[in-house]
Length: 280
Ligand code: URA
Image (spheres, rainbow, N blue to C red):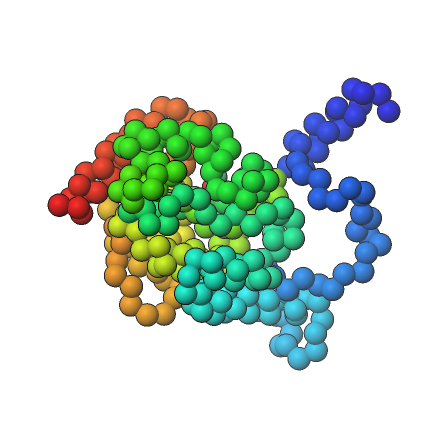
C-alpha cells in the first residue's frame, strides 16, 4: 500500500473514533469465544419487559441481570471505601462497566484532596486515558487558565488556593463519545463517595453531564447555571451535610463556542464571592 493510502486508512479510523491501539496485533473478534460481559447495558424497555425471568444463564439474561447487579455492587463497593486510596482500589476492581476493558488507564483524580474547591467533569478523553489524570488535554489547559483567573491551581498545597479534580466516569468512553445513562448510573456511587471523602466547601459541576447527573435533574446546563445548589449524594445511604454546588460550561464547549467565556467568567466570580462568604 502506498503511503497516502496508509494515511487515508488512519484518517478513516480517526474519523470513526478509533484513535488508540490496544494490542500490537489485530484480533479477529468473530473467532474469539468470550464469556458474555456482565455490564451495565440498557435493553429497550419492550425487550426488557418481555425477557424471561432469570433461572438459566443465557447471555442475554446475564446482560439483563448485569445492569441492576452492577449498580448494587457499585454502591456496596463505594460505601465500603473509607479513604481515597480504598476508593481508587474499589473502582479498579469493579467490573460492571464495559469501557474499563477498552481504556488504557483508570483516571481517578488530580490536585490537592484537601482543597476547598472540587471540580467534577464528564469523562476522560484520549490524553487523560494515556496519562491517567483528568483534564490534561486541550480542554484541561483551558480549564487551568479559567481557574487561574480566580487564583485556583491544582498544584497548590494551600487548601485555600488549591483545586481537586475528578470526573463522573473514571474510564474513557471509546472515541470520546458521551457517557451512556447506564455508565453514569454505575459510576455515580463512586463519584458521590469521592465527594463525601473529600468534603470540599464548593463543588463545581463542569458541563452538562456532571450537573445533570449529580443534581439528578433533567434541566439543561444553561438552566442549572447561575444559581447555587445544595448538593447531597443520591445513591449513598446516610446523612451528608449539603455542599454548595455550581454548574458551569465545560471548557471543550468553550473551545467550540468562545462567546460563552463571558458566562464562565461570571460563574468564576460567583465562586470567588462564595469562597469569601464561606471563609468569613
Ligand atoms: N473532559 C472531561 O470532562 N474530563 C476530562 O478529564 C477531560 C476532558
